[in-house]
Length: 397
Image (cartoon, rainbow, N blue to C red):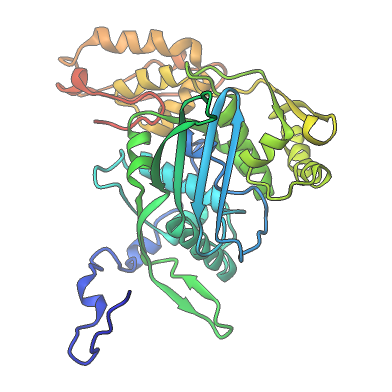
């Protein structure tokens, strides 16, 4: 029950909120060159598998709570969600992955806050520089922030009485947001592209990334995929094909009824599920992420089968070696993907050189190249041998 306060005697609620990070950029900052898009993006594995963000481009906003239970690749998930502004969908996958990537690029701050701008977010997501993009980004962040999820893990199978026990935990995509917005003549609310945009990741999400429970997504492929459903399906496929030991399945076969829940498709009709997946399948085939895909059978007996094409994904273990050597996250991921056969040898050379050598050392280009000259700057620090680096995230601790 809400308590009515006398507004005349009560200070504005804004006086209790810190806006110290909410500022506009300076003219000097506006003239800074654009940051290049990263070669790879970072994404937490468990949240990618939960199926909370629908691959639909549009959803029924009247549906503000739902439940699902599905099993993919031997993992069972039970999801309960409350979504006051509608289920996350469309570009929300891009928004979340961009936030996670900025979090990793900031070395996973202990307070879980990421400070950026709507302009930088929009650029990272590949959206156009217009008011509609800033409006869509605002709505996307609000959907993610307002969504609450309870995830259940089955701890025992049904006994003689038919009873099944579950362990449950409440999780959030985002714990806090600070932004500046404005309305145009059509009352279209949009983010201020130049003001600081501050986003706090959910506690479990941030801790999981910090602990290395994440995957590296191909940035080039993400920008080649034109439609949000294709990008969302790529993220979901990549998460479910990953085994516990980090290896990737060459093939994945899943019941279509379970797959529609894992991808957030809301229709139960098999023909509509096929149709919703078809366009995304075509894009993933055209961009050589998938070698082949088929949907066989009818009704509850229908199965989706995926065969993955070979792509130069970075080996997380090699990324770790380069991170130990002081290479930045994005550079380490790129080098591990492009020259996996040279990483261990180059890092071994660096280790043998020892911290007593020059303050900076450049790994010989011949060790990390095929036809192009690639150099990796290695910073020597006395504390480098004690530096803990998480396998998939590259966060320092």
